[in-house]
Image 1 (cartoon, one colour):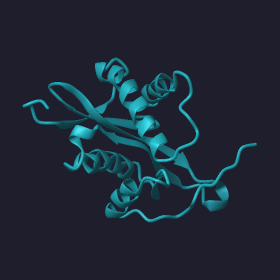
Image 2 (cartoon, rainbow, N blue to C red; image 1 turned 90 degrees about the vertical axis):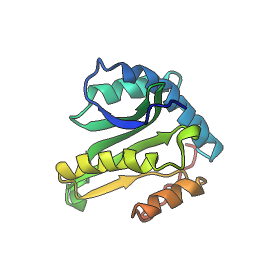
Image 3 (cartoon, helix red, strand yellow; image 1 turned 135 degrees about the horizontal axis):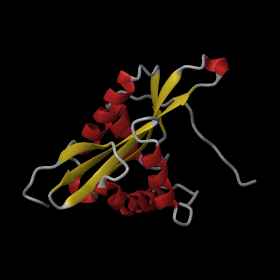
Length: 161
């Protein structure tokens, strides 16, 4: 690890060089999710497709934040705005889409720090509720989010068509 302290930074501009480091982290995150039981695999080149979408919507529809030091980026988080259906009031919601911290930087409060930057952005936009998904087999992630005040609301189920 770098002697330089880690800090959290918002990616606001599409020309920020940090975007180029996110595909590898995104792919790593999905590999870890698969080990916890996610059955829908990342599409071919899915990590680049995701980064492109996050760049286009940066600070309009979503926010991406990174954990970095002098050696590079070691984690990221992304949140997006969405609307609830009209029958549920059509209110503005915040969706934490991804939070990932590399193994060498875990258990140091970085995941919470990344989330808090998203939370502040959601509050500035006056969302009614913040939602997220957790892989059912990832008990550590479930515990992490519960510690941050989240409750289980829905259980997502699927079957092949």
